[in-house]
Image (cartoon, rainbow, N blue to C red; front, side, top):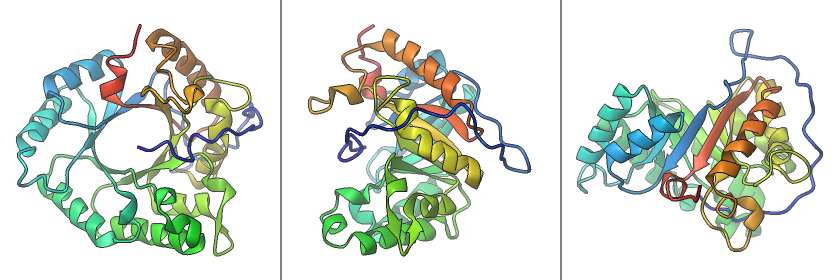
Length: 282
């Protein structure tokens, strides 16, 4: 999960206190306060991961799955993770993504098929960041269109729902005279916003930078999860809780829960990432 461009400093209007009612089957209800997910990059011991997740109210884990999962020896660990997650009532999503999947969707489809063959996951979680490609600068319209085509192909024929990681600023872009954020929402079941900030409210805060997606998610009746960062980021200290520590992060995210639940699309907060979160200072 890159913070390139997602870490851009913007002054964004404070979050509105109201949101238009919308929902699946006529009603959409915001997640309960404390609803958490987390990214799991790396081959950590399943027993440690699930113990941590259970202790920290994590209800979903985005577990990285290598494209070579059938042959690289990772399958037994993922099976153990699945078994323990099931016992703990934690949803397990398959995490994967490379920027060049935008240009080479056949690689993404091969990965998806490898994931489906494991029969271990409840959803596909895509971390594809097309804006990190040189083509985003040289051919922005074509690159955005190819990313949307990738989402179409990933969804076609897949029995699992698809969630995509997105930067907060997609709504500022258009593709073929249509809003890019809205076009992404049409093609996925849910999104997770890289709303990486270390304050809850006010200008350039988590709630401020995520408000556009929460509003669009409510209109589209799609779930919108917000993201919080725990990795040290020397070039963007206000994007992470690495300096503030775990206690400050808990208090800040509790305020985000309270504020963001005015949007029916709000689906809680995902923490990036387990490896950094578990060593965050108190």
